Length: 119
Image 1: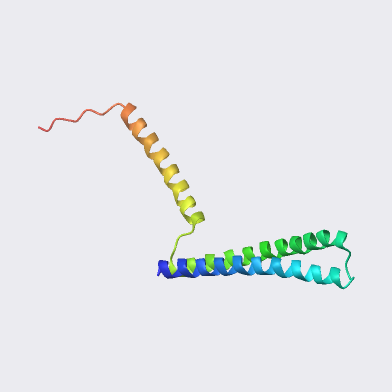
Image 2: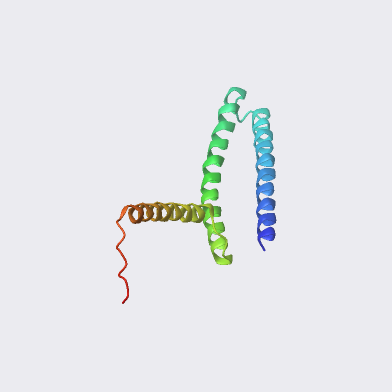
């Protein structure tokens, strides 16, 4: 089950990378067409591309947040712990280990009661 989820996640990631690469090429080609038609000056084309790429970055970040929420729900549904879940568990274990060590130190220092002899 985990392998299938990871394979699907990899496919989505690679598809996204391919889409982004294709989109950047399309933007550059579109900008070149605008310059050729006289609708955009060559000196402004770099700023135009930068502005579009910045907008894409914002959209990508927002999409990433949505995707993370979806994956968190999917992982929760199928019972897979997230890195956050594991970190919380490790933090709890660390606290418990410190408490256990403290209790061991206290019991080692405490005087032991003498056992009563049975008659």
